Amino acid sequence: MAQQMSHRMQIPDPPIARFLFSDTRMAWFWLIVRVYAGWGWLGPGWGKLHDPVWTGSKAGVALSGFIAAAMKKTVGGLHPDVSGWYASFLQAFVAPHVVAWSWAISLGETAVGIGLILGLLTGVAAFFGAFMNANYLFAGTVSVNPILFVLATWLVLAWRVAGYYGLDYWALPALGVPGSTEGRLFDRARGPATVPR
Image 1 (cartoon, helix red, strand yellow):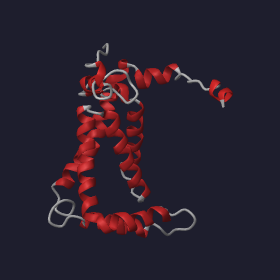
Image 2 (cartoon, rainbow, N blue to C red):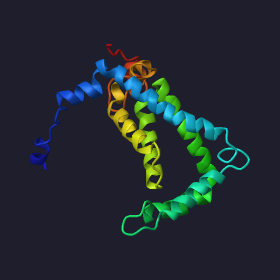
Image 3 (cartoon, rainbow, N blue to C red):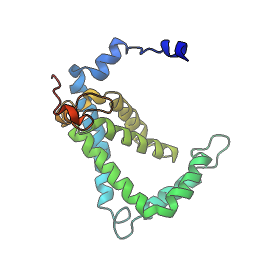
């Protein structure tokens, strides 16, 4: 075991990855990407929050139709558009609680959009956006989901600088990250973080 531990090491990122995902000189690029992706989430989310078939008196109707359309895509040879395991998930966990999921989707899309546009907890917002995109893709819905999924994945990788021109400029140094020795949230004994800009 000791010998195994001695062989562990961290492999550094290549220079191009450090430049793209960690260098503040690329923050302007990530600003464009995150605002574009944020509008891609905020528009539909905001629309759902004001649509009676998503969050109003008929909440769940639209999602029920979405689930029914996904179920029709479970046939089609060896590789149907919707896998059997995902269809089972929709039937067992989403369909019985369609109103709650309808609200969760509407609020989630809106929150991801706001987080990305404002650059607040950008990595977290992008992660949940990618998670929702993956679910839409699993349900057989293409539309803008592949594009938003790719952009969200890149934003997760660039979380350190993606919100640099946004609220993360102040939020990340103040909060810190788990395992960090800086930031008030995760290391209260040290007090306010002093991160050079």
